[in-house]
Image (cartoon, rainbow over all chains, first blue to last red; front, side):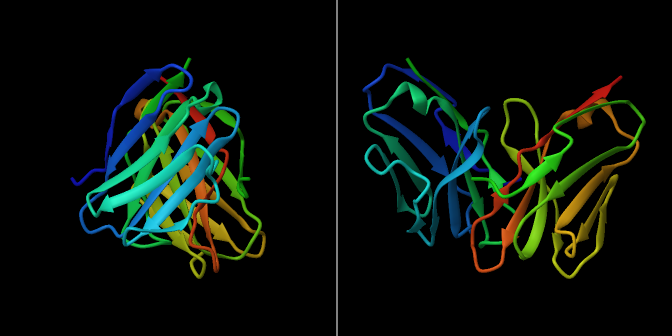
Length: 113
Length: 111
């Protein structure tokens, strides 16, 4: 079965460092989403793309987060500088189109010390 | 903020029993979806029900949708230990391309 692949699986770094998370969506899916999951806030949508174009990044702190899709096989989420409150599990998901079932990767577990 | 709420927040039942989870939402929808999340893993899509459908089945899963009450339920019959997971509903609001996820129900099946 096709899967969404996320790297790294785990990341521990110190406050102030740059963090880059990568996602390979399922081939043929034209919509890609970035989510953050915490115990307190649950699952939050950070940004999403269709056909590589960013459509909505209103869920992201703009001053430190950025999301891009350099090509159809790669989506990135960067945090610079990172802060302890960014500690969470970050998920990437892809879908054939909006309203369609989303396929999630297994996430990047991020810990900022 | 999340627009969906699920009830109960946690549920523990004996293996073999049926489990029912409920979900409420606030706006008109295109469809409603249910997902499962095992510990340490990503969400897995289980079933999608469109706004013009009232009931849908998939294996041991049965989903109902009541658009007049803006609510849905997920029934898992003959539960198994492997069904232990968190279950989320997600609605696709009309005119909004983003899914809105609920807070989830943590289901524990006791062997």
